[in-house]
Length: 313
Image (cartoon, rainbow, N blue to C red; front, side, top):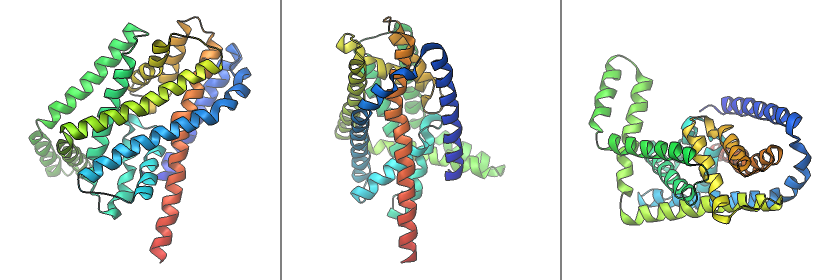
C-alpha cells in the first residue's frame, strides 16, 4: 500500500471520528470526563503495548517455525508497521510487512500465510473470551456466526486450492494480471498455513492470542472501575471481546464506529449513562486501535530511515 494514501485515509477517518464525538458530546456531555480518562491513559497504553508484544511473539514463532527467523528487534518494528494499516477492510493493509520482510529473505507467500493464520486465531481467542458471559445473546449469535463462517470458508478454501489455480489461469489468459497475482497470493498463503496445523503451533498461537486479548479485556475492566462503574467481573470482561467481534462482523475498516457503538449499547443495557459509556468506548479504542495505528506509522518512519541509511552505506 502507498504510505501517502494510508496517511490520507487515517486523516479522514480521524476527522469523521472526531466529528461523531463532537456530535455525541453536544447531547451527552462526553468530554467532561476527559481529564480523568487522560489520567489512566498511560496504564491503558502500557497494557496495549504488552499485547502487541505478545502478538509479535506469536508472529515471530510462526516465521521461525517455517524456517524464516528474523532479527528480533527489527522484526518487532516490522510487525508494528502493519498496524499503520490496521484500519483497512479485513486488516489486509497489514501486509505492508511484506515490503520490509522480503529483504530479510522472508517470501511474500509466507507473510500472507502468517497473516491469515494470525487472523484466524485472533478470532477464535476473542470468541472464547466473549462467550464467558453473553452480555447480548443476539449480538453474540451474529458474531459467532461470522467467526464460524469465516473459519469454515478458510477450511473449505484450503481444501480446494486447485480452484484458485484455475481462477488464476483464467484471469491470466484475459490479461487481468493484478487479479491473477492476488489469487495466487491467497492460494499460496492458504497453502502455507498447513505447515502450522500441528498441536504445538496451534497451542502456542491460541495461548498467546488468549493472553493478549485477555489483557486488553482487563484494561477495559480497569477503565470501567476507574469511572466507578461496577459490573459482574466475568460479564464486564466479555463486553470488549464481544464488541470486537461485532466490529469485525460489520466489515468496517478496523471495526471503527461499529465496535464503539456496540460497547455503548452493551453498557447502556446496564443503565450506564450514554455519555459515560461513550467516553469509556473511546478510551479503550484510543489506547488500542488508534495507538496501534500511530505505533505503526512510527515504525514505518523508522524502517524507512534505517533502510535509506543502509542503502547509502
